[in-house]
Image (tube, rainbow over all chains, first blue to last red; front, side, top):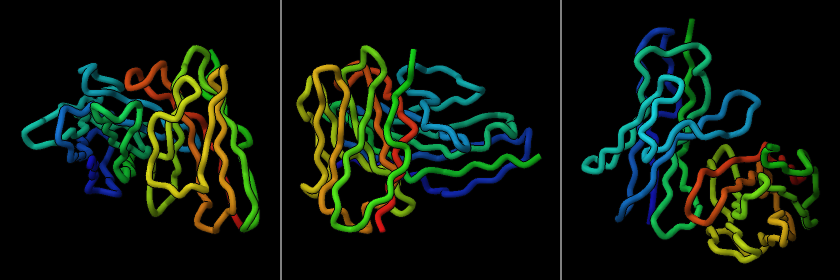
Length: 110
Length: 113
């Protein structure tokens, strides 16, 4: 079975502060991990995926297979980063199926 | 390129009725997946279609069904609606099965009274 856990439902930081959204997963193979973001009144969209190893909008995420984690980090949060963030996993034999975490609502205060 | 289009955007039904939701994927995308989003359960996978065949199915009762047409457009149907079926239903498309990024539609908000 595959499972994704985001321990924080709500996260509030001040503008310019570092932010880390935690994601842990359970999967007995080599998964593909994603972070999706949903801004207010917008559709769910991909932020980044671990195989790309990119930095999008200043966000990075490193897959730690030993700790089965895929935490999302940004050194200096901006107000426009306020959104709902979902961590998702795709298994090797799951087709395109994504298993999502419960989501973390990030609020960046001025 | 147009994004994933879902129709209708909003639906109000009563218990016992059935409903059909439609999804038009991004041009060239052949895989369509459906998800249910609720405040209590979050985002849950319903099923995936590729080349007009259901390839994956989540843990939902048989009242939830779907199909895909030769142009990759997909529909999902929920029969004998229950109050608990009230949710946002999201459709996502990707180029192929098990590869490519999933792009999501804006969703259909279903309210069951």
